[in-house]
Length: 311
Image (cartoon, rainbow, N blue to C red; front, side):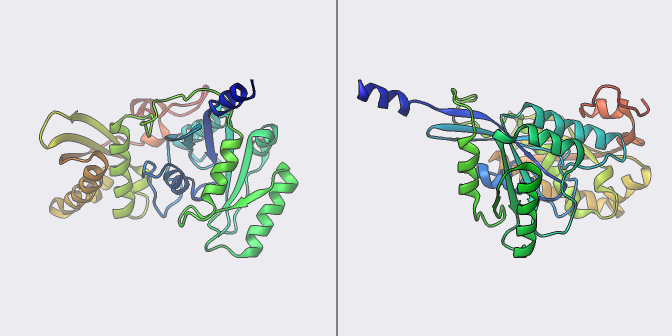
């Protein structure tokens, strides 16, 4: 009888969704990639890079954690920001476990208001981590840990998503809070989004790397054609900007800049898909798309009900 009970215990698995939430640029995307062991979420030095929830799946014996990288928590300035905050709130509400990530390297505001109230209500399934412990001052890590204890009643872990320090301990804390149940996805899957989504994100990441000022924030990328049967794989992508002047900047004199964008983005895409790629880039103006509900809908950004903005 005891052997049967031990066998039953050994067969128990845990599975569920883990939402990564926090202010912009705290390192959520870097942490997602570190947890999954693959580059799924784009990473740049600029804040507000993540616009949509990015899902990465980690399956090991006994558990499957489905991580959701969310846009940074902030006060919306325009309609695209509202869409980003909507994505973060949905992930926070639907997740089985919530990981709040704090930035140990920069003096910045911690989450407040409704976010803190929501986190308090999830205390039993909440984990808090102070990121960038490899470069943070000990006093800052201690201050954030005290805030977590006082405001949330949760002890904070110190981690470095960049170096991997503390990540396995953090993973253990997350897995312990996952509900018991069968795996949600096949064991060899790494993500829930289609390849096209990640190709769009890799092009957009390269835009952030190549262009300055406001151009990256005014840019959206969408795949219009993806022929996997072609050799090399044919991908036609459109880079949308808000103004004609931005279109000229993206293209560059004599098309030099768009060619550089294509070369750099293609190399990333080929690494991701594991085969040769022909990347056909186009640049189009979609006036004021970040502030127009109709344009955001066309580009696939879901908006919360009752959102303002022009069509």
